[in-house]
Image (cartoon, rainbow, N blue to C red; front, top):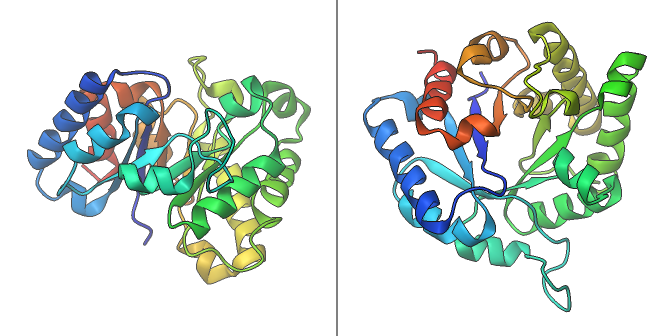
Length: 257
């Protein structure tokens, strides 16, 4: 049995004070729901400036902290970049890489995502690597081809050895911030394909123990029907992670309650 992982991607939202308050509210909400945190792994992904505050607010609680990106470099003349050692020093345990917004808005390609994933893993962070397809690919019926290409060039190209831990997040780009959601069957088909490819690359046992998250507008109203699918192991939550009650409800659903 894979333990579900619910990760909140706060994107460019929340000041430091607001981030601290939201993290504190989530920690209190978990304390009010005994047993839930034992059944679900929880990660919060605030903006860089709030990482330390969120790490402090969740200290002692069963909650991880994720950076929203990282550099593939450990340091040097890279203005505006944030390294893996910096994220770890701020309290991060995970890092989100290759999110569709960075791929589309910042022209971040698979090779760069792969280099960042390798650096994160080598530096002791758990990479959450995002892959997914636009509506044109979905309508053309070539979704699995696109997903396979991204896995090959965003993950397999740099991990010659099996990574200690790696999370894949499938995010249908056409379902992010649009109000649309992949049907459970559509999402399950892609998740099953991802697990098959992970098994081919790293071994069936490793793939069977690895988490694959759904990242296409999961919310309390659709979480149950998505999370019941055999290869959907949690969610990378965007908008719903900014609302304390919604995020906690998704966690409770993931825990089976």
